[in-house]
Image (cartoon, rainbow, N blue to C red):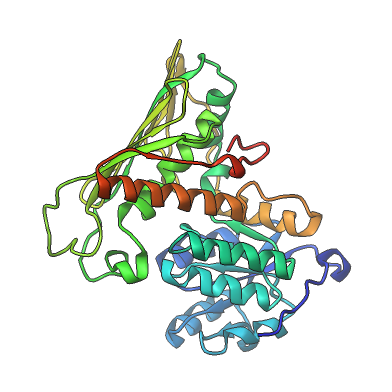
Length: 355
């Protein structure tokens, strides 16, 4: 496939960038579409789906023209659409790498939902395509734009209550019916660890401002072996950061958990719920957090559009997605071996992110 070279957005004279959503599942239609009605730097400019009925439904709602509607078969012709600048990949995990790469080769910048891909090798292929095409790539890590999570970052890295000693990070959900792609390892690449636990990994790093040196994990017993025959039902793991700093984490598809708690030398701070789209609540050992709720997805997409226009670096770049996939792989390796696994992540330190 021929690589379409990037055309500088400022030269086009655009004030707002067009975003095409690839995949029209619950997250795209329930969160990203409403967010794109609130964005200032970007707008909904295209839809990609294998379901013509969905294309018709949302086309009518947003008033898109037919030439901004694509199937997966004609996706590559998106290269000819100058109204679309950014492609947001909202597909099952097994398709993240393929469509990220195809979008960049079609001359489009990419936001990709977590996890970045199915494995480390696919993440590296995406990063190589970023280098080859000159396109920009950002992870869909919305919590970096949420004021409650930003306050957890600030309190931890500024050592407001002294050095953080222990983190408790729990993110679990009742998965529901068994016939869904998240329970199919060929499409998901894993269970609750890749779907929910990745938020725990993220939080441990952005609160401490450190990279983990080792992990020690265990799978929890399966209460429904048939339903969870392909993926773990639950997993617990500890991340070791040196200086006796540890993060105790759990993610499960048969519990409801939503806690982010940090205990420091002279106080504590927490979010409960911590990882939701809205309704987050924070407390510290001194009282309630006073944070203004926002539309996380709108701020996330606006920030990336600004990165494309100005050339500034994304705070959630491709390298962060690769880093997290390396940690996920180590957690799975540790659980399978029932032994601690060392991590070597010095190459993934990100300026301003502490890892």
